[in-house]
Amino acid sequence: MTTVDIGTLQDYVHGAAVQVRRGDRVLVVVRIDQDVYVLDDRCSHEDFSLAEGEVDVTTCEIECARHGAMFQLKDGQPASFPATRPVTHYDVVVEGGRLQVVVS
Ligand code: FES
Image 1 (tube, rainbow, N blue to C red):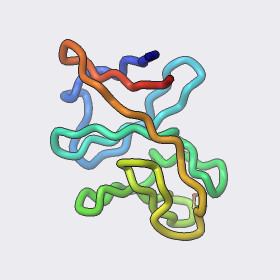
Image 2 (tube, protein in one colour):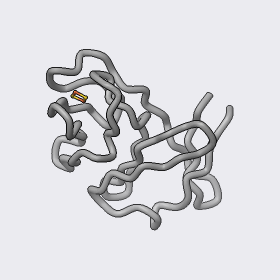
Image 3 (cartoon, rainbow, N blue to C red):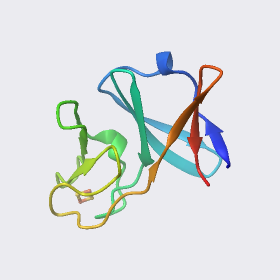
């Protein structure tokens, strides 16, 4: 298992999308309450940063700011058009209080 450290839960604000770069990876990290979700920070419709979009904390989705597609944070699946393909989703594990993104 290969992981990437993205800090601690306290580094993220409830309901905010944050772009995190680690090496050549560009991720969008969203905290909702005590959960943290990580997707590739690239809309599957066109090449656009999801970190620019709004988070719906009630449905646990993120909206692409470019054309309005919604994606489920729990698995990266599209929830509305114009996106029809998922965005890569990553599991997050906590080790010693640090958030570790499982990248492979
Ligand atoms: S680029 Fe994201 S919905 Fe079009």
